[in-house]
Amino acid sequence: MAFLRLAALKALHGTSHTLLLLRRGRGPASAVRAFSATMSPPSRAVVHELFGPPDAVTRVTELPPVEIKENDVCVKMLAAPINPSDINRIQGNYAVKPQLPAVGGYEGVGEVHSLGSAVRGLSPGDLVIPSPPSSGTWQTYVVKEQSAWHKIVRGTPLEYAATITVNPLTALRMLEDFVDLKPGDAIVQNGATSIVGQCIVQLARIRSIHSINVIRDSALSDEVKEKLKRLGADKVYTETQLDLKKVKEFLANIPAPALGFNCIGGHSATAVLAFLGQGGTMVTYGGMSKLPVTVSTSSFIFKDLSLRGFWLQNWLGSNKAEECRVMLDHLLGLVREGKLTYEMECVPFDDFQTALDKSLGKLGGGQRKQVIIF
Image (tube, rainbow, N blue to C red; front, top):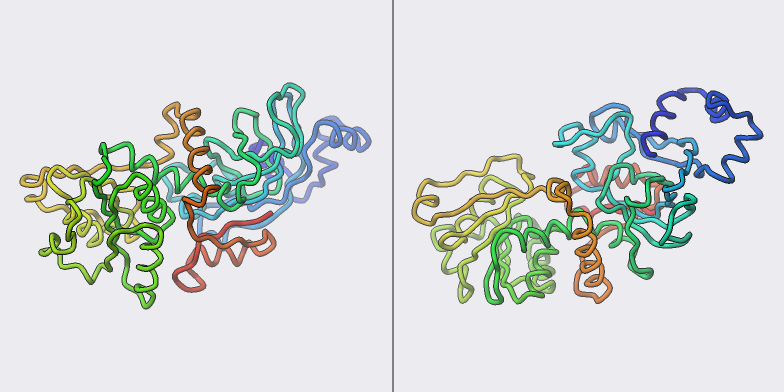
């Protein structure tokens, strides 16, 4: 249905909604009846018709109503985040490119607005998230088939419901999919201040797994260390603080990690590798520095290290829909219990441009994840 909106948008370019309905064989009066019975409300959306710098190619515009078919659910979006992958998609340098024109956004939370005649198990007012996540959440109304939506518990904080899939689910899967970790084992990661990093710290703590965390140097390093330790981090070091020849001293009484996570690359990835014990595995899920991962020959030969990669979209594409929903319910349960938390900034949709500028780093470093509130 998102494609219908965009096809209509592409066709419009100065054509009124009424003319669009006339082209479909409806007069103005029937258009009103159709809207009230089977059409969604018009939607305000963040659209891009070209790939390029997000602050240059995106615009907020109104999209026309679309038909709500018998198996469709029309959802009034309540919140949606700006993730780095959203930025990459708009730039055109993500692994999967959306069909243009496209509405931005990949995850979010909304409230059921109206239903197709064959929909069962959902009611107006129910809280739902797209699961698996799908493109087009940066708009006020989304129409998709019922199978695209997952009902969640009312009372879940909206900003967490909107962001629970891309980052927390990545953290959960990486902790569980590569090494059989036991209580008392250890993991090491860089990018510990990211939402994935914060979730890894907390999910590891719940399982009594130690975490060693590497962060970038900044004027706020001491404050960041304390925040991570409050979340459950055992050790937190800045990149320049580490002497990779004396890793055992930094481990203290913690066992050498069996599993490491890298989202930066370059020297920071080398630090993660240095901490790993015999037969350890490093999982790369990002490359913020845009520098390659470099591994010494001796690490492969004498430590028998393994290098793996993780991309959530690839995992979700392997018939994991039902399994995914069980995990999301588990994570949202931890949120409601106060066992999973991370920092975000909620921004009204009218201030989307400011939120985008913050996400692009144009307003200074250290910005929290931006969550758009519709």
